[in-house]
Image (tube, rainbow, N blue to C red):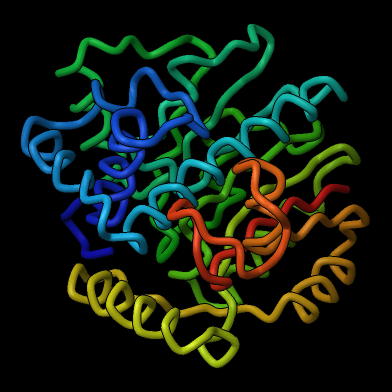
Length: 285
């Protein structure tokens, strides 16, 4: 992310989330605020996502929708277990806090100050009220720790919390990613996290490598290059070493079978989700 400028990738994700509401059927993830939170300029770009011939673009849009649904489903289970703190790391234009159905749940949005200021302006412009249950935690990771930023916003480290960490890990270093996971692992029993990650390029198929290279070049031009790729077996080892005992790691076949009504085979194709690069993981204490 470039200092003094909002996250370009956060805006593109929001555009795809909005496009999902209009162009995909059946919906994987319903978000009634997805279009409303966009600027006029961003909203004008949404129709460009309607190209049915771009199967990789549609697949990325579906993956973004699925990961949001996964995070909110796992959050609901955490609330049933008694968790009352929800942290959205790299919140971007995520809208959960403004449609939160859990009256007892405190929500903490963590993001770079520039991106967060931009979001708050978008909310004001759209007439979306900021609920009392929401705490903003502006955080520049180059100058502050996650612990400091959250505690300044009222986060309780002596109580369990659930974390949503979507669309962030590929932009980090291994050290910073493990540091964040270590912070979560040090919280009380019942805490957990959902995040998505990418496997190394060498583990992708040839066609998928070409699609990945195109996307990687695009985010690099926006000043937010991909930096971290994780091997599933090593990641599981790292998580267990940190203290996570329940780990659910889903590849694209498992994702398709669970949410898209498709057979679990890797070769399943219906234009909704392709490739093996993106994975979803939930880890619990």
